Length: 353
View 1 (spheres, rainbow, N blue to C red):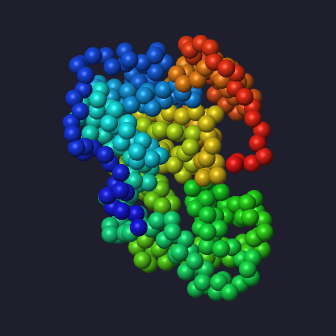
View 2: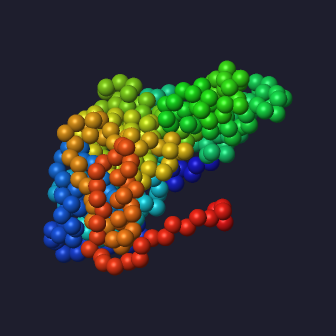
């Protein structure tokens, strides 16, 4: 099961206090584009951060700048894709502005959803003592539904629990119809489309009867709470004055839906990412979230980070050429002050070994 402590995912407390540097303009440490992003005022902000351009550094300084300018840290929400990323960013922010940064609410989407469901979940039909299933538990419950409905004795070609759970999860996170997922990814199972629906209905009923939620439910119920009523959605959104999101190119449709709901009382959302680095479509990520950000949040400021601190000019030349061939993208041209460097090699191998 998902431990309660881990799921909370808020990292204000640390074992020792980090003393910040003397008062100064913290953006002086940044290049002009990074500084513009960090010092942005209110309103939606999209930071297009090419590889090696200091994405994390810029987001850390953005958090620090908000605190330095007087935004209450407990009203800042920082969403990341790993607990470690949130801890690292808030630790670095503490070096800039001191212990005040400990009050920032930082964590993963799922951990933040868990915390909000404990507080507001009864409005979504959940009892406060609900239990969170991990992926293995969820697949086992799907298998129970599969067996109880008599599908365990079906043809060997009938989808196993792992496939059923994958289809269910993908449907919840992407909004793609179950029929379409099966037709596109598991055409060998199209004859069982009606059976998918029966199993998923039974699986959902069993979760409700036992007061269980799975990882996908955490996000789904968060979205439903935001949309349930203007009063409830407004109460949840009003908890934060600023929402910041790391690796926005890796968000899925459901997460983008949540973020729109969290901005119903304000438009202070900062997202950072790179449309050229979206590699998790197999997990439901949709790079069109980042491409469509200016349309979803009208009046958004776009800051592009192009100065690279990691690679040499020959590597960046190849990178820029490859990126320029993308039909849907934000325009950027990576460059560096470094000199020299060998041209990259293209190596063909028989397999991944």
